[in-house]
Image (cartoon, rainbow, N blue to C red; front, side):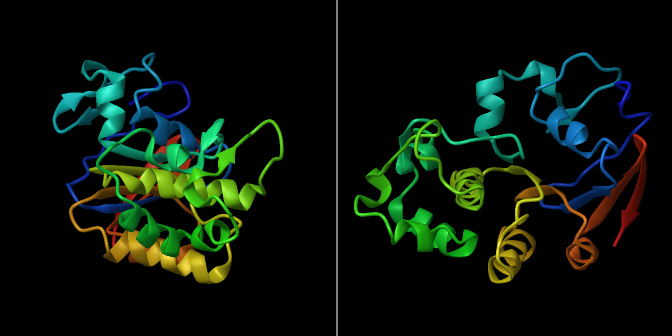
Length: 207
């Protein structure tokens, strides 16, 4: 891949691998992650998922196979359940409760009289950013995606939940391919592979 920010990057990720993307601010980490979502089309080279170029997928179909957590995402005006399930009828309350225990969202849900039926209004009574992040992370994990793309998913979270999230990603999701932007050295060392970016160029390291 070469898109003016990333330069001559080439790698192949095996199904089920846990991969950390590291580097300083502005090194291209977020751009690399977004390439997998189909958000960009104007770049040289190709990005393939299951040997098929990203551009050949219908975006809705592609994103149904992914769980995505990016720093600029936000909740929308709708119930907490709608914000998590995104209309997927196969998602169950039991499965979300289990995830909410890992992400730290359960303690917030316990304060809500209407529980999952609570209506969230991003333009009105705004939730703390840490709670919004827990909702978005739970959403990303909810549909048991084949590919997880996560941008520092534990940033700003309590140490206990930071450890739970890392344990979940590394050891409790066999068969799910995980790419995580992270600069947490202890987490990086536990990943199968590290893609370290410096000014758009990549150094690939196998752990």
